[in-house]
Image 1: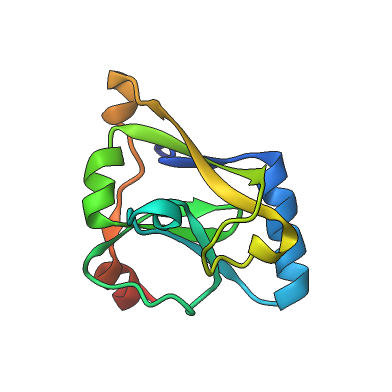
Image 2 (image 1 turned 45 degrees about the vertical axis):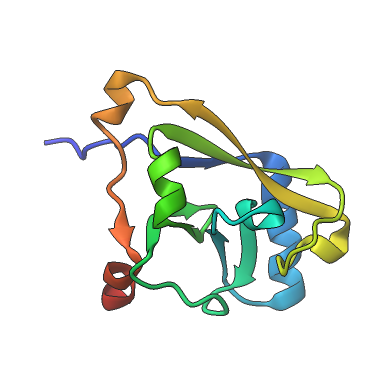
Length: 135
């Protein structure tokens, strides 16, 4: 019997991995991402030291990327649930509390629609509460 291969909901670029490596060295801790769906920079993915952003029942755990849990606000997830996201980085200073901002870069999301086949085989999500209960 072979293990089921799920379609990931979120991918990551090499440039983002490099920024995460730098942040891990600087902070010496695990990292996490949250995308709130608020206006302006609130709709960008934000990187925090794991546990510095409190997730709850209104958040959706979408999976792990490069060892980091990635969460999205459930309202925002409703808009994005049919798309595969790719965490990327771009030059420029955002105006959020995300850890990469002092580096002169910021994380961003690129997206594409899932195929019908991919939609049938997606990585299962969890609510923030379910994630915390497993913790």
